[in-house]
Image (cartoon, rainbow, N blue to C red; front, side, top):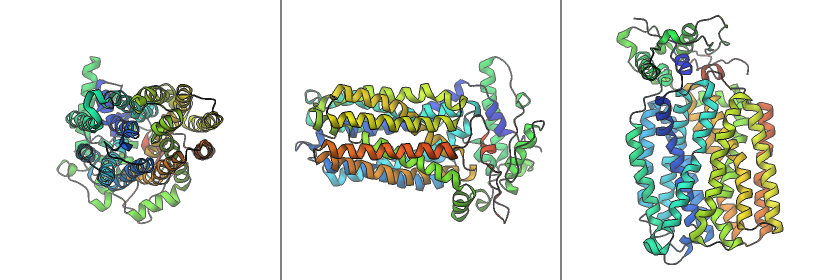
Length: 525
């Protein structure tokens, strides 16, 4: 029995429909939860220094942020590998459960040790979310809008930040829940996670991943169901025949010629995953999982692809991830400390200052995202990174000279992070696009882990220590380092970024031919 082999092209050709909105909502909430977690910790930072709460020091609060990031690094590496082996859906359900349990436990901690442990476990779940979900989103969203959708979803971190800011205004008001009101903030995250878990169960497995596993018939059924839902909304039937021609390159081959049929090109993309992935497999074997060794590359093969075959891409992605992680974590994990220490802002009012900051971060990816599909990845990544660095230097100088107050400092940061939010989101977009399907989740995990481990783990602890000195000069040095990192990353992106706009994932990075003894080949990029 012949099974349609044009699954990737049919996914890319789909008109935007309510089904896509459900995917965006169900999966994109991972960033909302992350934003909620980070904001609540940032907002309650100064409250947790009080003896009637946890009695932490500024340095311990900074370390708690670093421990959360460390958990996210470990979670990304652990669950990222499993997402390539066991599937996207299975993992984005498991990681949400890990997050729920850990954030509930955080609400019942009574000292730095237990608080730090729970923050580590919460980060474990969130880190796993990043790997499984970024893979699923890119594999389900049409190529023509992949950039703007990915940026908007990553930017939704700041919707969670805004929710956390509003919630903190209530929870940190001693008249409402007393000095222990901060605990309710962590319980809120768990309540939201339960609701999202119910919605997320309806999201299907990635058909692209299923093809790589030799489960072509299952992938065919999922895509056909999506097409039927989209057709029902439009009042017309859209089947496989409606898919427009779009050349897709397979491993070891250049893109198909313009006159080639999508079915033929996509069949070669599927067969590049090994004999078990053939779209002409008999019906009796179509749903049988392929041999694991033929569908998931070994760690040695992964290293070969990252360090030799795509070494320029790897260097570019690493620069983007390290710089944005340092830039963001340096500012946001210590946001409340700067406002309370240098501008004497009441800790209970921190949420009011986070709202405009969050607004700038949400609007950046939403308004600039379409340009990543129209103008192109290279130009927009380089521009947003470079302008973010220049903006942070200017704002840091104003902070150093004392010409800003709490309100103008917040507005200045909001403007800088309007650009920086789009820049940081583009880093996650890039890493999820430029490596082969069979190692996509692990690639996201590796670069997230290394980038965040270097930039994200060091930044909160470093800035917590700098702020504790009470010296504006010391804090400005930290801002300068963050600005320099993103400016260097902009130069690297301008030189090595991949022009991925509008292109099928299989053409940007052809699937690996794991059955070939010589290892995977790739077209020149």
